[in-house]
Amino acid sequence: MRRLVIGAVTVLCLVMLLSSSLLAQQRSFTFWSMWNEGEPQQQVLARAIKDFEAQYGVKVDVRWAGREVLSTVRPRLLAGENIDLVDQNAAELYGALVVNNIAGAMNDVLDMVVPGEDKTVREVLKPQSYEGFFKEDGNLYVIPYNLISAGFWYDKDLWNDLGIKPPATWTEFLEVCDVLKANGIDPIAFGLLTEVYRSYFPTEVAVRVLGAGALNAAAGDPAGELFKDPAWVTVGDILYQMSRKGRNLLMQGYEGSVYPAPQTDWVMGLAGMFFCGSWIPVETRPLAGPDFNYGCFIFPAIEGGQGDPTSVRIDPYGFNVLAGAKNADLAKEFVAFFLKEEYCRAWVEETLNMTPRDGIPAPAELADLQAAIERAQSTHTDYDGVHADYPGWYLEVFLPLNAEILLGDITGAEYAKKLSTMTKEFWARQ
Image (cartoon, rainbow, N blue to C red; front, side, top):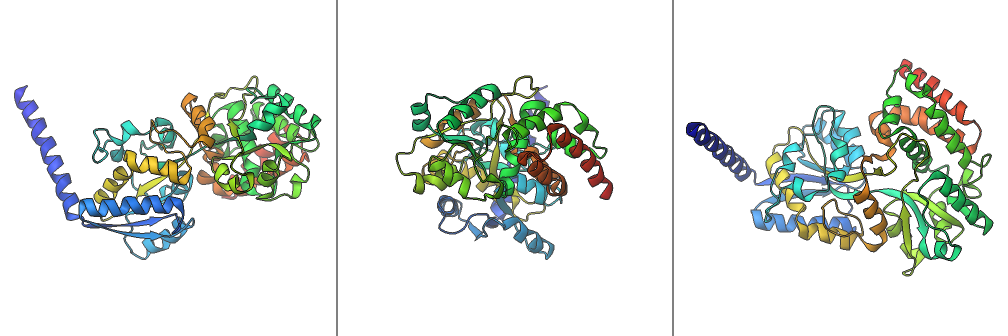
């Protein structure tokens, strides 16, 4: 037994020495980032990069490539250029890199010690920030540093004046809408012509009625059989209620409205709620003013639904070290370095976003969402992952049908039937 223990310790020491040796050989790495120079997010990253270079005696070749970074990276890789590290929205990382076998697995980073601290990356991160992104192969391809969520935004002062509070169920939600309408306020700010808005409600309703993953599974069913579940009619019925031909819950003129008109109408008090991501306080603060009292609640539970009513949408932004990266060890060391408490606090304070690191309060405007995340028993990804896993289906089936149901041009039953037939037809064309 003693020999076994000594042998195990020897192997561990050899692994650690080998890892240190590899790290010492890598004097630089290349990082292509989604942020533009001058943005608060870029400034926090740039400061961490400067500190990393000084402490490790290395060079980071960073390119501030902007939001289209992934479409820029791929042709460079095909041309033989080495790129070690990239960052972007997790769904986009998976859709552009993982499916094309370009991304490298990041599981080992979870067990790396955060430099200068006595905890591992796994120990400092909220599990909700990454646990929904393990693939069937058991690998995790993103380590988050920015935590985005979504919900219904509202003006707390306005709602207090009207005597209403965040609804917990769909029935209560409809009652809130009635109060808003009775006071001359459109219940929900919405723009049909903005594609991302068009898929928010269908996804959230599906998660509440059938559970997280149900939409993704049905989208990938070549026979379209999963959409024949009667629960999809329920999804369609609820979406129809929102439409101009149902209970008319969406703002006047939503049929032709595009970003940023809906959020502007909401901030101006013309609409009572606006469903969107946790970036909204940053985008609307200049118009809203310093005294605007932001509130947020997640999509309400739907009576009789099979889905977890506490499930929260998690849309992390994070790092991936590419497969075949020449300086993978050094790049991964930086990923762990950037999750130090110092930079995570700076991220919250300077970018007004949430950090996935546990124990750091969100900005005041995002406190409600952070509380919902911490209460959540489960999570779901934006659009249930269909836009990343099945981009063609998302564009050719989901978006057009969402427009039809939210206009009230088809019924809930017709929505479910069309989802089934159009999904089968889509996969037959592939």
